[in-house]
Image (cartoon, rainbow, N blue to C red; front, side):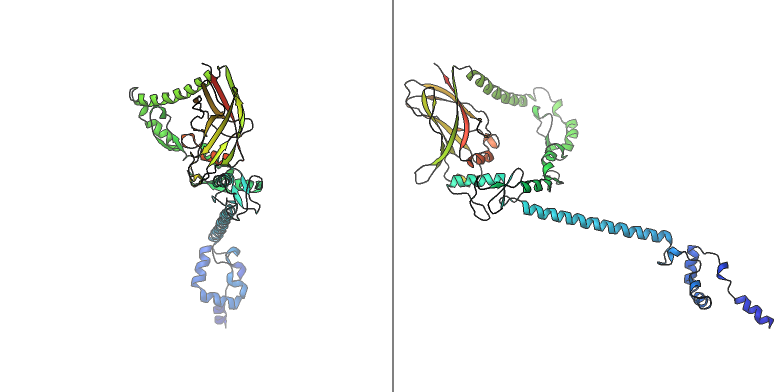
Length: 403
């Protein structure tokens, strides 16, 4: 009897309260090697004793605390990154859709200045709006909206300030670095902040032709060979620079000399459009008669030197001439030039012209009205803006040289 009791006591498990807590590695080894023993202990000791000694934070996933925390943080960060990427993609898609909705109906670009709309609400930027009005003037037709063909003019079209404000907040891509910035700050970035903006070498006045991105300027200037050149080698560049300065100085001296004349007069004029009765109707501008030096005068202008179809050309110029309408017994040497007047917003550079008016020569040649932008002082955008108006306002200065 005693032998049976002793053997039973040998196989009896100790109470659960006396078992020490096992480490993480020990728990894993026990779970992998003692599956049979765990089953027997669960049948003898109850369901609660099967996970005795296992920390609570590993009971749900079976992973150690450090590994479980790493997995949880990784899942959280990946989910946050994916949500941020999704939000960024949604923002870019929305900005692109808004840009498409607010773009000009003609050039399909966001407005850089003002935005106009026709009576049906179709949008046009200021440059395209004036171009359409100028084309209508050149074709002798009523300008229409390119979308709905409703008539447009400066009296029927209106500014859309809400679109202008919304467009200024949309991202736009820099033409040099291809990064996106708010449209309202893009011009400042491209002119003063962009590291890829094209820049000249500071030695360009002595002949250096280098032109590259701004961030390479310092390195180029350190290695530029022009500062080490002799005076004879840079002489040609300095002479070209001096010639430009002399030309500007010559015009300034001429103007100062003209202001010393005894007879000086100016008139604020307006040229209005009209068409000839020829087979091909040509567009001209002409002022009403005005008085100067006891004579009657007229200013006449034409577009692209009376080109047959000026509306088919993107390059547009205005040339004008001074016409004497009354007879004169003595020759009159007249200097004249046009400039912006008090009732005009015309942008024009100063260029002085001269003509000798006699009984047989009552009309001067056609001279270019020097608008500031474009090649050779002829600005197509400024020309379109002037053609879009009902008339061209300017001030004409005339100087008579007494002989």
